[in-house]
Amino acid sequence: MTAGREKKDLRTGYTTGTSAAAAAKAAALLLQGEAVGTAIDVTLPDGNVAALPLKSAETDGETATAAVIKDGGDDPDITTGLPIVATVRRSGTEGIHLFGGEGVGTVTLKGLKIPVGEAAINPVPRQMIAANTAAVWKEPGGLDITVSVPGGEEIAKKTFNPKLGVVGGISILGSTGIVHPMSEDALTESLRLELSVLKEKGFDRAVFAFGNYGLSFLRAQRVSEERIVKISNYLGFMLDRAAEMGFREILLVGHLGKLVKVAGGIFQTHSRRADGRMEILTALAGLEGADTATLRELYDCKTTSAAAEIIARERLDGVYRRITAKVTERCAAYTYGEIRFGTMLFGDGNVLLSIDENGETLLKEMKTDDV
Image (cartoon, rainbow, N blue to C red):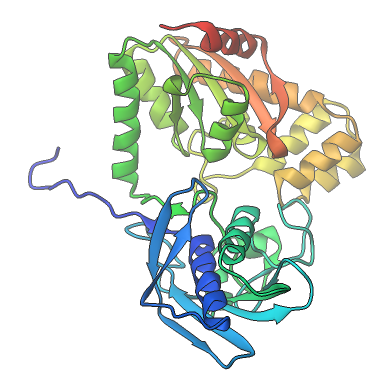
């Protein structure tokens, strides 16, 4: 630790999805005449319960509105401080019906997880809002819930939403419900420590996954979680540390949106550091023989999910084999041949797109090897 600097434990926070679920639950309780206090419990995707403070809650008997101030903890989250508001009204139709209001964006391009024309409220937040409100709603019929974020439209201009075709506001996000602080020094140090612990246990093989989607995919592959290190966007940093610690073999597992960058020689994969996804995919499709019209269509895609639809339509699956081969080659060169690599590439819905020969061997060994 650098002299004069004290280690500070960073405070976690809650996603916009968790905030919206808390506000919706409070409003639903209020609408049916139940009292709400200064905080509201909300169940997270992993089953744990968090208590979020309410900024306001009121009803006129026909509708009820509650607000939670977004708190991202010590993460430099641009949405921290915004009010996340839910307004509920009774519906004659069973179920929870979700709408986007002021400051919540609308999806205008294909390739995202929400259909074009729908409010940009991602699947996990939708499930959280529905589950938390349904758990307390006792009246017959369902609920119409409108999520609003006053100030969201202005904040969205400082995000990647316009580039992704989300217009008019922010997205309601969150895969775990929790915001983990992203101080770079703290995060890279925690990643280094995790790898060091793995080495101290006697392992010289590891699985590198880029995030929660990678972890979900690996669970479906029955890979021992003891071997998995979630590396976030810091592939280059972690390859350096792995080489220093004497790791012998690494299985890289990533979504198309991440690994296509690595195939192009990008080792810090955050979108603000480097992108080039469509340029790389377009070049690889050209090597597979795609015509000019298809290449232009790929180049103009906003997301790799949209590009994957074109790749499937044109039967250009060789693009995926080229990515896995190139990722393995790039990482081996990065570590001067000191580490043996294999690569697994997956797409939306945890669909395996490609695995190279080294990857198949390492996957088998990771499932069966105990040391």
